[in-house]
Amino acid sequence: MEGDTEEDNLKFESFQTAISELTSSIPWTNDKFTQYRFFAARDKDPKLAEEMIRNAVEWQTRINLHSIMEEWGDQQGCDDMNVPGGYSRNPKTERAKFADNHSYCGKLKATTNAGAPILVQRLGLFDLSGTVREELTNLMMHSWCYMLQDGFLSVRSASLKQNKMVKAALVIDLDGIGFSIMRHMATIKAFSRIGKTYFAEVTKTVTIVNAPMFFTGMWSMISPILPAASRAKVSILGRDFKSGLAKHADIDPEVLPTFLGGNGADDEVCFARPIERGCADFKFKDGTIPDLC
Image (tube, rainbow, N blue to C red):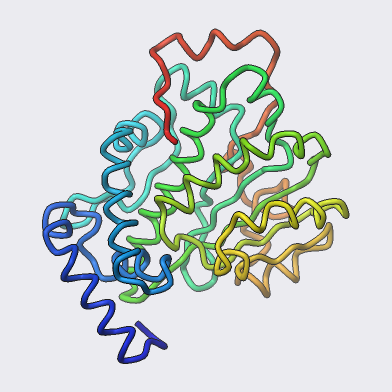
């Protein structure tokens, strides 16, 4: 890839050889851009990259990720290997509809100026306290995994179409966030662990907007659990974020949802509504929720 040394290229070829039987049987792993995401995610160490991609394949099979994607959304086109180019949100079961109403993630129909997917999280409104109180963490992790996989498949598709490495722009809206989130660092780490363990190099930029002053302190607690490369992607902006967002993520602010001051549809992102007390039994209506960790 661009900027790699001859040594990097040799290491990447070694990695490709080591996983050749995997990439010949698992369609979503068979392109060089996907393979390179795992290679780059483990600092271009062939053995660590091999371990990561094998773990990702095993994990997707174990939790039946395809079933989760079908429960939560509809496929958006497929390539020659029948790999979806992403999904459009369309929860089909009662538990998925419930979680979709209270979750906080979404992918915009619009793209960055360079044609990369835009992912948005209404993290400031996410009722993390209610999620923990009602023992719905696993269910909400389904929403999180749906967004991660949708983003992963979307950047894979965009890379193949543009014949270059494409990564998504992630916008995290902290409007409404309170100190109570600090009580749930273990849960935040559990969500983060899934992303950094099984999903390789999905985002190019992470722009945090509407960040309150106290978030700087919280970031100092969260950031150490992230890889150095992930921390380097982050820009933290306050209320007046439009110009900074455009510069950092190459996003036209007009394509954002109206809750972020743009002209896009708010329902492209889950509404992150509060979770009522006493709804804990809901999660058993159509089966036990698989543990995704």
